[in-house]
Length: 52
Image 1 (tube, rainbow, N blue to C red):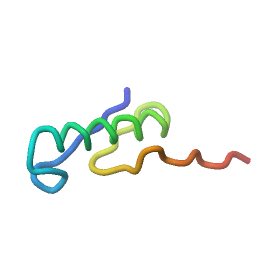
Image 2 (image 1 turned 120 degrees about the vertical axis):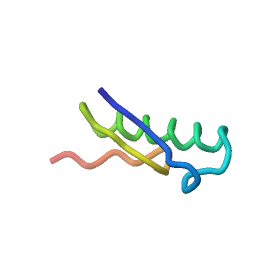
Image 3 (image 1 turned 90 degrees about the vertical axis):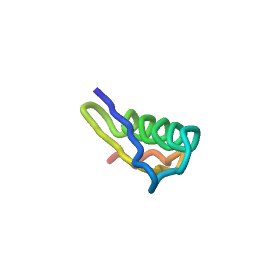
């Protein structure tokens, strides 16, 4: 399961801002792999980590 969240008022003062931050955090969690939680601002698109 991947979970993204936002915290009021630190991540935004209104519903739209909070939803945008939570959505970005969700996609960051999905990119990070399984069973991951991300809270707060995450740049999008994030660069993929290099694999050895």
